[in-house]
Amino acid sequence: MKHGAAGSCREQALSEVIGFVLIIGIIMAAFSLYMVYGVPVQGRENEINHMSTINDQFVSYKIGIDSLVTNQQKGLAMSTSFPLGTAAQTSQGSTSIIPIMQPIGSSGVLAINQRTITPEIFTVSSNSYITNTTAITSVGPIPIPTTQTYSNAPSSLLINMMTVNAFWNITSTGGTPGSVAIIGSGWNVTVNVTPDIADCLSYSTFPNGTVNTTTLAGNCNGSDLTITVVKNGITSLNRAVVDSNINPNIPYSINLLDPAYGLQSVITYPATITFSTTGNPVLTSPNVTAQYAYQQQSNYTYSVPLGSLEYSTNNNYWIPQSYYTQMGGVFLSQIDGITYKLPPEMTFVNNGNGNITVNVVALAYDPSDSGSIGGSSPAQVSTSLESNSGSLPYAPVSPNTWNASINITTPDPNAATMWVNYLNSAANQTGGIPNTYYTVGTVTNGSYITFTGIIDGQPHITLQVTAANLSASVQSVGNS
Image (tube, rainbow, N blue to C red; front, side, top):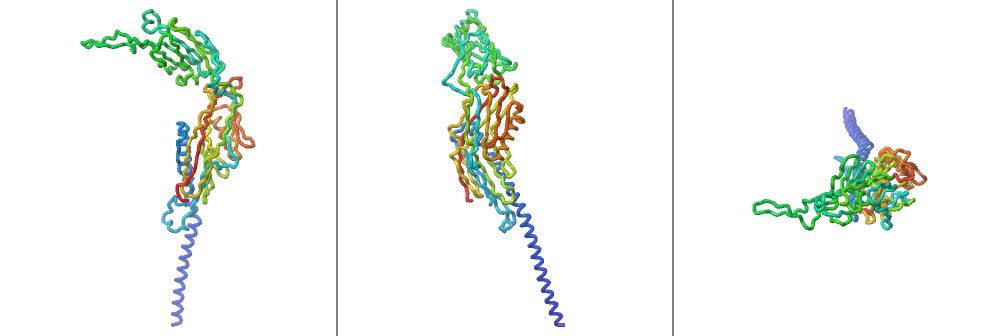
C-alpha cells in the first residue's frame, strides 16, 4: 500500500510537469506563429504607409519647386524634410516592450544626382525664329489705307498716327475725331481719337452754389487714344485708353501685338490685314510698320543634364521602391519598371489646322551638386532656383517653329520606355495631336518625340521652353 501510494504521488507530479510543458509549447507555438505571420504583416503595413508618406513628400516638393519657377524666386531657398525609414517612426502597440516582437525598421537613402552613373540629358532642337533684338528689321512705314499680307508673324505691328488739332478746335471747325480700322480674319481693331473733354474743364463756383463749367484748361487737349478689340464677334476691349490727353502734332504708336490686347492667339499666318481711316484731315499721315526682332535658325539646340532627387528604400517586408523627381515629374521605380505619379513639366496642345503648341519647363539640377544621406531618421533637402534660369529666346510670336524635337538621353532602359510612353500619351491622348503631326520612339540611349504639324513651308508650331536650373543640398536633421 505504501509503495502504491508513493507511485501515485510520482505520477501526479509527472502529470503537472507534462501539463506545464504543454502550456509552454502552446505559448511557443503562438509566439512562433506571431513571429512568422504577425510581425511581417505589421512590418509590411509600416513600410507601405512609409512609402505613401514619401509619395506625399515628393508631391509637396514638386509643388514648392513649381512655385519657385512660376514666381521666378531666384536665390530663395526652399526646405523639405523626408523621413528616411520606419525605425522609431511607428508605434508597435503592447508588444513594443519585447524587441523581437517588433518588425525590423527599414532605412533609406536620399540622394542628389546619383540615379545613374551616366548623366540623363534633356535636349530640344528646332527650326525656329530666335529673338535677336540687335538686328531688328522693319517693313514700312506703309501709308494707310492699305491691305498687307504678312507671311511671318511680326514681333510688333505698329499703328502710327498723329492729330493736327486739339479736340475743342476739331469741334469748332466741324471736324470729327479720327480713327484707324484694322480688319483681319475673325478679328478687328479700331484705334480711336476719343474725346474726353471732361478732363479739360476748369470748374468754378458762384456764391449761390452754381457751378460754372465753361472754362477749358489751357494745358489740356481733351482727347485720348483708345483701342477697341473684337475677336470672333465678341468685344474683348472697348475703348480702352492707351494714351490720355494726347498732344497735337506729336506722333503716337500702338502695338497691335501687345499681349494685353490678346490678338497673338487669334492671328494665323500668312495673314492678310486691311487698314483704313476716318476723320481726315484730323489724322496726319497715319501708317503701319511691321518690326521683326528675330531671325530663323534651322538648328537651334538647348541641352542640359537633368539630374534628379531620389529616395531609395531598403524595405524588409515590402517590395523595394524608389521615388525620384526629374523634369518636374514624380516617378516611381520598381523592379518591374518605372511609372510617373505626376507628369513632367511638358504640355502639348493641338490648336487645329495643323498648328501645335509645345510648352516645356526644363527643370534640371546643377550637375556640380552631389550628396546622399542614409539611415532611418529624417533628412532635409534645401533647393533654390539659380540666377541663370529663364525663358529661352524663341521669338514671342505664334507660330514660331517649323519643326521641334525633344530627346531624353538615359542609360536606364526602363526610364527610356517610360519616357516614350509618356511622350506619346501627352501628345495624342492629353494634347489631342494627330499622330500624323509627330513621331515618337526609342533609340539606343533614350527616347524622343518630333513635331512637324502641317508641312507646307510655313511655321505651324508655337514653341516655348523655360530653363529652370536648380541648386540642391541634403543634410540630416536627426540621428540615423
